[in-house]
Length: 134
Image 1 (tube, helix red, strand yellow):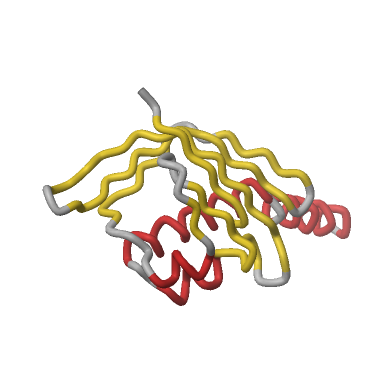
Image 2: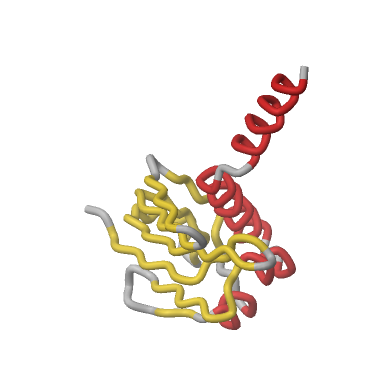
């Protein structure tokens, strides 16, 4: 009986401690916060030292994003690779962004690299770099 309980406890702790799943959940939370312009959620998810680089060369800080989270209508992630190195995670993959412009919706296909750090308040986005795909 004791062995069975120890085995269950070990299995539960292994499944609960999946850093890839945790950082993917943080990425989904970031996506929802961007779409709903939820400043409180973005404040929790964005690292104070954030460097958020766009495919046009523009770079924003956390303060910039909180002031103006953009006009994003949808964010669709393609097949994403996740590499976790302790408290650092790298996410890389294609992302489709649809934003509202003065002339209507604009769709951009990007290759995006995100760097997430795990701290006392959980996973936070500390860097993002994107490149336009053909």
